[in-house]
Length: 404
Image (cartoon, rainbow, N blue to C red; front, side, top):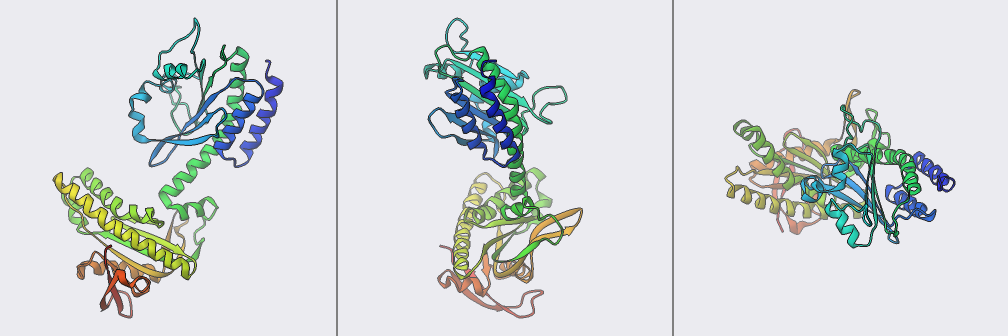
Protein backbone atom coordinates (compact mmCIF):
# COMPACT_ATOMS: atom_id res chain seq x y z
CA UNK A 1 0.00 0.00 0.00
CA UNK A 2 1.47 3.34 -1.05
CA UNK A 3 0.53 5.15 2.18
CA UNK A 4 1.63 2.40 4.61
CA UNK A 5 4.93 3.90 5.80
CA UNK A 6 3.38 7.33 6.31
CA UNK A 7 0.26 5.87 7.94
CA UNK A 8 2.07 4.04 10.74
CA UNK A 9 2.97 7.18 12.78
CA UNK A 10 -0.67 8.25 12.71
CA UNK A 11 -1.77 4.81 13.93
CA UNK A 12 0.82 4.94 16.74
CA UNK A 13 -0.40 8.39 17.71
CA UNK A 14 -4.01 7.19 17.83
CA UNK A 15 -3.05 4.37 20.18
CA UNK A 16 -1.42 6.93 22.48
CA UNK A 17 -4.64 8.93 22.35
CA UNK A 18 -6.67 5.86 23.32
CA UNK A 19 -4.52 5.46 26.45
CA UNK A 20 -5.11 9.04 27.53
CA UNK A 21 -8.10 11.33 27.91
CA UNK A 22 -8.10 13.34 24.67
CA UNK A 23 -10.75 15.72 23.45
CA UNK A 24 -12.62 13.95 20.67
CA UNK A 25 -13.02 17.12 18.60
CA UNK A 26 -9.32 17.97 18.71
CA UNK A 27 -8.31 14.36 18.09
CA UNK A 28 -10.48 14.09 14.97
CA UNK A 29 -9.27 17.44 13.66
CA UNK A 30 -5.62 16.44 14.14
CA UNK A 31 -6.16 13.06 12.48
CA UNK A 32 -7.80 14.69 9.45
CA UNK A 33 -4.94 17.15 9.13
CA UNK A 34 -2.35 14.37 9.37
CA UNK A 35 -4.11 12.22 6.79
CA UNK A 36 -4.34 15.16 4.41
CA UNK A 37 -0.67 15.83 5.13
CA UNK A 38 0.40 12.42 3.81
CA UNK A 39 -1.45 12.94 0.56
CA UNK A 40 -4.94 11.50 1.17
CA UNK A 41 -7.20 14.04 -0.60
CA UNK A 42 -9.80 14.70 2.09
CA UNK A 43 -11.52 18.06 2.06
CA UNK A 44 -14.46 17.32 4.33
CA UNK A 45 -15.01 14.74 7.10
CA UNK A 46 -17.66 13.90 9.68
CA UNK A 47 -17.44 11.67 12.75
CA UNK A 48 -20.80 10.41 14.06
CA UNK A 49 -21.78 8.27 17.03
CA UNK A 50 -24.99 7.64 18.94
CA UNK A 51 -24.94 8.67 22.57
CA UNK A 52 -27.02 8.22 25.71
CA UNK A 53 -28.34 11.63 26.65
CA UNK A 54 -31.83 12.86 27.60
CA UNK A 55 -31.76 15.56 24.90
CA UNK A 56 -29.51 14.19 22.17
CA UNK A 57 -29.54 10.92 20.25
CA UNK A 58 -26.24 11.42 18.45
CA UNK A 59 -23.17 13.62 18.33
CA UNK A 60 -21.00 14.53 15.40
CA UNK A 61 -17.66 16.23 14.88
CA UNK A 62 -17.53 18.42 11.78
CA UNK A 63 -14.23 19.04 9.97
CA UNK A 64 -13.73 21.07 6.81
CA UNK A 65 -10.29 21.69 5.39
CA UNK A 66 -8.86 24.97 6.63
CA UNK A 67 -11.45 25.29 9.40
CA UNK A 68 -11.32 24.24 13.09
CA UNK A 69 -13.41 21.19 13.91
CA UNK A 70 -16.62 21.62 15.89
CA UNK A 71 -19.09 19.46 17.80
CA UNK A 72 -22.77 19.27 16.85
CA UNK A 73 -25.56 17.33 18.54
CA UNK A 74 -28.75 15.84 17.12
CA UNK A 75 -31.88 15.92 19.23
CA UNK A 76 -33.97 12.77 19.56
CA UNK A 77 -36.75 14.13 17.36
CA UNK A 78 -34.24 14.73 14.53
CA UNK A 79 -34.21 10.99 13.93
CA UNK A 80 -37.57 11.34 12.18
CA UNK A 81 -36.59 14.10 9.77
CA UNK A 82 -36.91 13.62 6.03
CA UNK A 83 -33.19 14.40 5.64
CA UNK A 84 -32.30 11.49 7.91
CA UNK A 85 -34.56 9.03 6.10
CA UNK A 86 -33.01 10.05 2.76
CA UNK A 87 -29.41 9.99 3.99
CA UNK A 88 -26.55 7.66 3.04
CA UNK A 89 -25.94 7.12 6.75
CA UNK A 90 -29.34 5.55 7.32
CA UNK A 91 -28.89 3.47 4.16
CA UNK A 92 -25.49 2.27 5.43
CA UNK A 93 -26.89 1.26 8.81
CA UNK A 94 -30.09 -0.32 7.49
CA UNK A 95 -28.16 -2.43 4.99
CA UNK A 96 -25.47 -3.50 7.45
CA UNK A 97 -22.69 -2.01 5.38
CA UNK A 98 -19.17 -1.39 6.61
CA UNK A 99 -18.38 0.83 3.62
CA UNK A 100 -20.52 2.94 1.30
CA UNK A 101 -19.05 4.89 -1.62
CA UNK A 102 -20.43 7.18 -4.27
CA UNK A 103 -18.36 8.86 -6.98
CA UNK A 104 -19.72 12.30 -7.76
CA UNK A 105 -18.21 12.62 -11.27
CA UNK A 106 -17.59 10.68 -14.48
CA UNK A 107 -19.14 7.50 -15.83
CA UNK A 108 -19.45 5.92 -12.35
CA UNK A 109 -21.28 8.93 -10.92
CA UNK A 110 -24.35 8.05 -8.83
CA UNK A 111 -26.35 10.77 -7.10
CA UNK A 112 -29.04 8.64 -5.46
CA UNK A 113 -29.27 10.68 -2.24
CA UNK A 114 -30.04 14.41 -1.97
CA UNK A 115 -26.85 15.20 -0.06
CA UNK A 116 -24.74 13.78 -2.89
CA UNK A 117 -26.18 16.28 -5.36
CA UNK A 118 -25.50 19.05 -2.86
CA UNK A 119 -21.89 17.92 -2.43
CA UNK A 120 -21.36 17.73 -6.18
CA UNK A 121 -22.65 21.30 -6.57
CA UNK A 122 -20.11 22.36 -3.94
CA UNK A 123 -17.28 20.91 -6.02
CA UNK A 124 -16.75 17.57 -4.30
CA UNK A 125 -15.93 14.50 -6.37
CA UNK A 126 -16.01 11.47 -4.04
CA UNK A 127 -17.94 10.43 -0.92
CA UNK A 128 -17.23 7.50 1.40
CA UNK A 129 -18.93 6.26 4.58
CA UNK A 130 -17.04 3.88 6.88
CA UNK A 131 -19.03 2.23 9.71
CA UNK A 132 -17.23 0.33 12.47
CA UNK A 133 -19.04 -1.66 15.13
CA UNK A 134 -17.18 -1.96 18.43
CA UNK A 135 -17.93 -4.16 21.45
CA UNK A 136 -21.69 -4.89 21.49
CA UNK A 137 -22.54 -2.76 18.48
CA UNK A 138 -23.77 -5.76 16.47
CA UNK A 139 -27.33 -6.86 17.04
CA UNK A 140 -28.23 -10.52 17.55
CA UNK A 141 -28.99 -10.87 13.83
CA UNK A 142 -25.59 -9.44 12.92
CA UNK A 143 -26.85 -6.04 11.82
CA UNK A 144 -24.98 -2.88 12.72
CA UNK A 145 -26.37 -1.39 15.92
CA UNK A 146 -26.99 2.32 15.88
CA UNK A 147 -25.77 2.42 19.43
CA UNK A 148 -23.24 4.28 21.53
CA UNK A 149 -20.41 1.90 20.60
CA UNK A 150 -20.69 2.30 16.84
CA UNK A 151 -18.42 4.76 15.02
CA UNK A 152 -19.21 6.23 11.59
CA UNK A 153 -16.88 8.47 9.60
CA UNK A 154 -17.69 10.11 6.28
CA UNK A 155 -14.85 11.21 4.01
CA UNK A 156 -15.29 13.56 1.06
CA UNK A 157 -12.73 14.54 -1.57
CA UNK A 158 -12.54 17.41 -4.01
CA UNK A 159 -9.57 16.08 -6.01
CA UNK A 160 -10.46 15.83 -9.67
CA UNK A 161 -10.32 12.03 -9.78
CA UNK A 162 -11.46 11.48 -6.18
CA UNK A 163 -10.04 8.75 -3.95
CA UNK A 164 -7.69 6.10 -5.34
CA UNK A 165 -7.80 2.47 -4.24
CA UNK A 166 -4.74 3.18 -2.05
CA UNK A 167 -6.55 6.12 -0.44
CA UNK A 168 -9.56 3.94 0.37
CA UNK A 169 -7.37 1.19 1.77
CA UNK A 170 -5.57 3.70 3.98
CA UNK A 171 -8.85 5.18 5.27
CA UNK A 172 -10.20 1.72 6.08
CA UNK A 173 -6.98 0.78 7.83
CA UNK A 174 -6.94 3.91 9.97
CA UNK A 175 -10.66 3.51 10.72
CA UNK A 176 -10.19 0.49 12.98
CA UNK A 177 -7.43 2.08 15.06
CA UNK A 178 -9.39 5.31 15.22
CA UNK A 179 -12.49 3.41 16.36
CA UNK A 180 -10.51 2.01 19.32
CA UNK A 181 -9.52 5.53 20.39
CA UNK A 182 -13.09 6.74 19.89
CA UNK A 183 -14.51 3.91 21.96
CA UNK A 184 -12.52 5.07 24.98
CA UNK A 185 -13.55 8.69 24.58
CA UNK A 186 -17.18 8.05 23.71
CA UNK A 187 -17.71 5.63 26.57
CA UNK A 188 -16.27 8.21 28.93
CA UNK A 189 -18.61 10.87 27.54
CA UNK A 190 -21.58 8.51 27.89
CA UNK A 191 -20.63 7.63 31.48
CA UNK A 192 -20.42 11.31 32.32
CA UNK A 193 -23.77 11.98 30.61
CA UNK A 194 -25.45 9.22 32.58
CA UNK A 195 -23.90 10.22 35.89
CA UNK A 196 -24.81 13.89 35.40
CA UNK A 197 -28.35 13.15 34.18
CA UNK A 198 -29.30 10.76 36.96
CA UNK A 199 -27.21 12.15 39.83
CA UNK A 200 -26.78 15.83 39.01
CA UNK A 201 -23.60 17.65 38.03
CA UNK A 202 -21.95 17.78 41.46
CA UNK A 203 -22.86 14.22 42.46
CA UNK A 204 -22.03 12.93 39.00
CA UNK A 205 -18.57 14.48 39.14
CA UNK A 206 -18.04 13.01 42.60
CA UNK A 207 -18.91 9.53 41.36
CA UNK A 208 -16.67 9.88 38.31
CA UNK A 209 -13.82 10.91 40.61
CA UNK A 210 -14.26 7.70 42.56
CA UNK A 211 -16.29 8.82 45.56
CA UNK A 212 -18.46 5.72 45.54
CA UNK A 213 -18.09 4.39 49.08
CA UNK A 214 -20.86 4.85 51.59
CA UNK A 215 -20.04 7.89 53.69
CA UNK A 216 -17.92 9.65 51.07
CA UNK A 217 -18.77 13.32 50.96
CA UNK A 218 -18.07 16.78 52.28
CA UNK A 219 -19.61 19.68 54.16
CA UNK A 220 -20.83 22.54 51.97
CA UNK A 221 -22.71 25.81 52.32
CA UNK A 222 -25.85 26.13 50.26
CA UNK A 223 -29.15 27.81 49.61
CA UNK A 224 -31.43 24.78 49.75
CA UNK A 225 -34.60 24.59 47.63
CA UNK A 226 -37.47 22.20 48.26
CA UNK A 227 -40.66 22.22 46.19
CA UNK A 228 -43.64 19.91 46.41
CA UNK A 229 -46.75 19.52 44.28
CA UNK A 230 -50.18 19.98 45.85
CA UNK A 231 -52.84 17.23 45.84
CA UNK A 232 -50.51 14.79 44.11
CA UNK A 233 -52.08 11.74 45.78
CA UNK A 234 -55.56 12.65 44.54
CA UNK A 235 -54.24 13.36 41.03
CA UNK A 236 -52.28 10.11 40.92
CA UNK A 237 -55.38 8.13 41.87
CA UNK A 238 -57.80 9.94 39.55
CA UNK A 239 -55.71 10.29 36.37
CA UNK A 240 -54.50 7.60 33.95
CA UNK A 241 -50.81 6.95 34.52
CA UNK A 242 -49.65 8.45 31.21
CA UNK A 243 -51.60 11.66 31.80
CA UNK A 244 -50.33 11.88 35.38
CA UNK A 245 -46.71 11.41 34.28
CA UNK A 246 -47.19 14.14 31.67
CA UNK A 247 -48.54 16.43 34.40
CA UNK A 248 -45.56 15.59 36.63
CA UNK A 249 -43.11 16.43 33.87
CA UNK A 250 -44.87 19.75 33.23
CA UNK A 251 -44.59 20.52 36.93
CA UNK A 252 -40.92 19.54 37.04
CA UNK A 253 -40.16 21.65 33.97
CA UNK A 254 -41.72 24.63 35.73
CA UNK A 255 -40.02 24.12 39.09
CA UNK A 256 -36.76 22.26 38.48
CA UNK A 257 -36.00 23.76 35.05
CA UNK A 258 -35.50 27.36 36.27
CA UNK A 259 -33.47 26.13 39.22
CA UNK A 260 -30.94 24.54 36.86
CA UNK A 261 -31.12 27.40 34.35
CA UNK A 262 -30.03 29.85 37.04
CA UNK A 263 -27.04 27.88 38.26
CA UNK A 264 -28.60 25.61 40.85
CA UNK A 265 -28.46 21.85 40.90
CA UNK A 266 -31.25 19.33 41.28
CA UNK A 267 -30.08 16.66 43.70
CA UNK A 268 -33.16 14.48 43.75
CA UNK A 269 -36.74 14.04 42.63
CA UNK A 270 -38.51 12.63 45.67
CA UNK A 271 -41.82 11.48 44.27
CA UNK A 272 -43.29 14.81 43.19
CA UNK A 273 -40.85 16.88 45.25
CA UNK A 274 -37.69 18.60 44.02
CA UNK A 275 -34.62 18.93 46.23
CA UNK A 276 -32.00 21.34 44.92
CA UNK A 277 -29.15 23.56 46.05
CA UNK A 278 -27.29 26.72 45.13
CA UNK A 279 -23.87 26.02 46.72
CA UNK A 280 -21.56 28.85 47.81
CA UNK A 281 -18.22 29.26 49.58
CA UNK A 282 -18.17 32.72 51.19
CA UNK A 283 -20.32 35.78 51.87
CA UNK A 284 -19.94 37.04 48.32
CA UNK A 285 -20.88 33.60 47.06
CA UNK A 286 -23.95 33.59 49.30
CA UNK A 287 -25.12 36.91 47.87
CA UNK A 288 -24.76 35.51 44.33
CA UNK A 289 -26.51 32.25 45.30
CA UNK A 290 -29.38 34.28 46.76
CA UNK A 291 -29.62 36.34 43.58
CA UNK A 292 -29.77 33.20 41.48
CA UNK A 293 -32.38 31.64 43.76
CA UNK A 294 -34.58 34.74 43.54
CA UNK A 295 -34.28 34.78 39.75
CA UNK A 296 -35.17 31.08 39.63
CA UNK A 297 -38.23 31.76 41.82
CA UNK A 298 -39.42 34.54 39.50
CA UNK A 299 -39.10 32.26 36.49
CA UNK A 300 -40.68 29.28 38.26
CA UNK A 301 -43.79 31.23 39.24
CA UNK A 302 -44.09 32.74 35.75
CA UNK A 303 -43.52 29.42 34.03
CA UNK A 304 -46.03 27.72 36.32
CA UNK A 305 -48.71 30.25 35.36
CA UNK A 306 -47.89 29.87 31.68
CA UNK A 307 -47.92 26.08 31.70
CA UNK A 308 -51.14 25.96 33.70
CA UNK A 309 -52.78 28.39 31.28
CA UNK A 310 -51.79 26.16 28.37
CA UNK A 311 -53.07 23.08 30.19
CA UNK A 312 -56.41 24.73 30.93
CA UNK A 313 -56.88 25.58 27.25
CA UNK A 314 -56.40 21.89 26.46
CA UNK A 315 -58.86 20.85 29.15
CA UNK A 316 -56.11 19.36 31.34
CA UNK A 317 -55.75 19.53 35.11
CA UNK A 318 -53.79 22.38 36.67
CA UNK A 319 -51.03 21.78 39.17
CA UNK A 320 -50.12 23.85 42.21
CA UNK A 321 -47.01 23.72 44.30
CA UNK A 322 -45.17 25.22 47.25
CA UNK A 323 -41.48 26.08 47.55
CA UNK A 324 -39.42 26.39 50.71
CA UNK A 325 -35.92 27.84 50.89
CA UNK A 326 -33.30 27.82 53.61
CA UNK A 327 -29.62 28.67 54.03
CA UNK A 328 -27.00 26.77 55.98
CA UNK A 329 -24.39 24.05 56.10
CA UNK A 330 -25.33 20.70 54.63
CA UNK A 331 -23.59 17.37 54.36
CA UNK A 332 -23.30 16.47 50.70
CA UNK A 333 -22.38 12.86 50.21
CA UNK A 334 -23.03 9.20 49.69
CA UNK A 335 -25.74 7.58 51.80
CA UNK A 336 -27.66 4.31 51.72
CA UNK A 337 -26.53 0.71 51.85
CA UNK A 338 -23.44 -0.73 50.15
CA UNK A 339 -25.57 -2.32 47.42
CA UNK A 340 -27.60 0.84 46.68
CA UNK A 341 -26.24 4.31 47.32
CA UNK A 342 -27.52 7.81 46.67
CA UNK A 343 -25.82 11.19 46.66
CA UNK A 344 -27.85 13.76 48.51
CA UNK A 345 -27.69 16.47 51.14
CA UNK A 346 -28.58 15.86 54.74
CA UNK A 347 -28.56 17.93 57.90
CA UNK A 348 -30.65 20.32 59.93
CA UNK A 349 -30.88 22.84 57.09
CA UNK A 350 -32.47 20.23 54.85
CA UNK A 351 -34.89 19.13 57.57
CA UNK A 352 -35.91 22.74 58.13
CA UNK A 353 -36.46 23.54 54.45
CA UNK A 354 -38.90 20.64 54.11
CA UNK A 355 -40.83 21.96 57.12
CA UNK A 356 -40.78 25.49 55.68
CA UNK A 357 -42.27 24.21 52.44
CA UNK A 358 -45.02 22.40 54.36
CA UNK A 359 -46.06 25.77 55.79
CA UNK A 360 -46.75 27.24 52.33
CA UNK A 361 -50.13 25.54 52.23
CA UNK A 362 -51.09 26.59 55.75
CA UNK A 363 -50.04 30.21 55.15
CA UNK A 364 -51.42 30.19 51.59
CA UNK A 365 -48.17 31.37 50.07
CA UNK A 366 -46.44 29.77 47.08
CA UNK A 367 -42.94 30.48 48.42
CA UNK A 368 -41.56 30.78 51.94
CA UNK A 369 -38.06 31.29 53.28
CA UNK A 370 -36.20 31.62 56.56
CA UNK A 371 -34.58 34.83 57.80
CA UNK A 372 -31.02 34.28 56.54
CA UNK A 373 -32.01 34.23 52.87
CA UNK A 374 -34.68 36.93 53.13
CA UNK A 375 -32.36 39.45 54.81
CA UNK A 376 -30.01 39.41 51.81
CA UNK A 377 -32.70 40.95 49.57
CA UNK A 378 -35.30 42.42 51.96
CA UNK A 379 -37.13 44.15 49.10
CA UNK A 380 -37.99 40.69 47.70
CA UNK A 381 -39.42 39.26 50.95
CA UNK A 382 -41.99 40.25 53.58
CA UNK A 383 -42.20 38.80 57.05
CA UNK A 384 -45.11 36.63 58.17
CA UNK A 385 -43.93 36.44 61.76
CA UNK A 386 -42.64 33.49 63.76
CA UNK A 387 -44.12 30.03 63.39
CA UNK A 388 -43.55 26.70 65.04
CA UNK A 389 -42.29 24.06 62.59
CA UNK A 390 -42.71 20.34 63.14
CA UNK A 391 -39.49 18.82 64.40
CA UNK A 392 -37.78 22.19 64.93
CA UNK A 393 -37.29 23.27 68.56
CA UNK A 394 -37.35 27.04 68.20
CA UNK A 395 -40.01 29.01 66.31
CA UNK A 396 -38.75 30.35 62.99
CA UNK A 397 -39.57 33.66 61.35
CA UNK A 398 -40.92 33.00 57.88
CA UNK A 399 -40.95 35.29 54.86
CA UNK A 400 -43.18 35.35 51.79
CA UNK A 401 -41.60 35.99 48.40
CA UNK A 402 -42.44 39.13 46.42
CA UNK A 403 -42.46 38.02 42.79
CA UNK A 404 -40.64 40.35 40.39
